[in-house]
Amino acid sequence: MIVTLSAVAFFGALTFLLFRNREVGFLSALVLFLFGFFTATTGAAGPIRSMFEALVNALNHAA
Image (cartoon, rainbow, N blue to C red; front, top):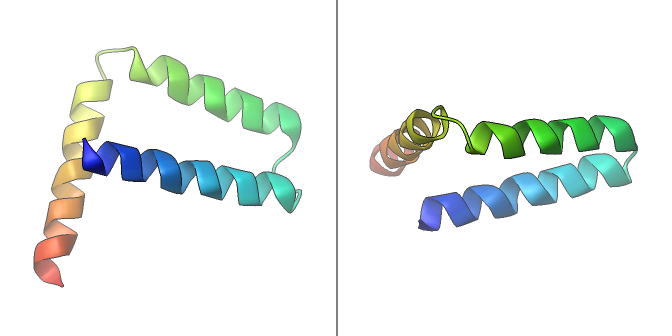
């Protein structure tokens, strides 16, 4: 759960910075948001979350 909240905060901040610096247009940001939203409701959400948590755990143990 902590990894998920950290990922949401990180990607939210990254999206804000890209949008603020005009690296991403409004429609592009909307499409990316909707893609993430709909991906989270599919069966792919579980494996993606597990892969991300495994990556974070590997990085924690490597440091």
